[in-house]
Image (cartoon, rainbow, N blue to C red; front, side, top):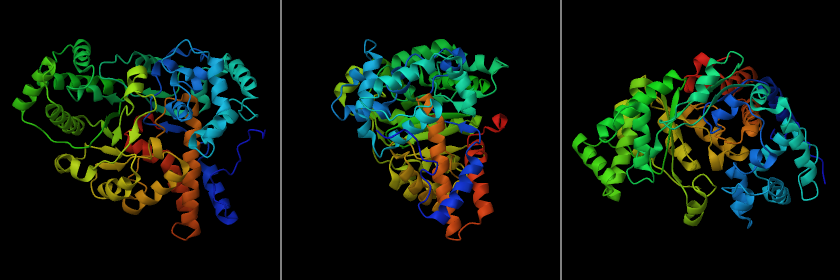
Length: 471
């Protein structure tokens, strides 16, 4: 069994001369603070600063990147602890280690090797024979004060960590952290109102009730819902938010007349809204969210083209975000035409577009960002947040939009301890890309260093309006 020892030149070019350039570029940004403007870590973890439970609870069960691929090899999600509190964490860890080979060549393997070695000091490769040894070492470390969430936040050199939050959330953990003078970083909320967008979504009526309770505004009408959402956006801004996020299947934004919206809203409350009603309502809400961002300046993130909960039986048993959301195509050019005609040159409005369809980057998003001041190209997300795909992304986006109209790296993770590994991966890939531009005489070496620094700091700070949090 080979030792777990990630190579210092991993992901850098094979050509010795270009590799030397890439090494220098990478080293210049390797220790830079992390700006994470989109992710799914629970703010309460950091606010409460309790010790993490066990290795499986921290590293395996909540990470659908991990569980989905083991499930693809015949292991039930319940065996991995998904919606199964009775699962033995040591057995979950043994299953993961026994399936270490299925991650060969994947970005998950890359992240885990960096994380296990550089965060936890693990020096043996996971496998059936080493599972218990690694589990015991991790358990011992997780019991120590220097491995609590806030201590790791400082060690990871995180400057800003954005979370994803429902409009009805009280944001108490965010407020507690902001008021704590001993906490040097920033954990800021992101406004995500997906579950209010369509009257045929499960739990839509319950969501309206919760929002009404939190906001103090009656949501029995469409106009009331919009007032409540607008009020909560203002509250999120008071608590440090700089952005919103929306995840939908299609990217069509079309406003409807007020009377029609009120009709559909009433039908939704009565349980009589048709599929066509729900689609029209959702597309109107996407337009409405853009109008709100043009008013209040919250940066609008749009994640489109993913078919959520593809496997009905798994969704029924385990719920959402359990590994069976699958990528698809989306049409930003046509779907957002009305939205961008109305808001695309508004200096207050900003939208960051993400896709899991690589062709959409070069054919739609980058060209849109290359014209509209408001449009930015979101970093590779989910199925394409891999070293090879990030390299392709750089070529595709830079051709039409340059570096400055991209978002900076987005880790989009629930796996807290993988954050430094993910950002380090991006910095290495970008260093390799920039080194190749220097080697082919498309950039000077000094300019490549400046761009590398911009990609990890100035660009995400500017794109997501994080200036007040910049170090």
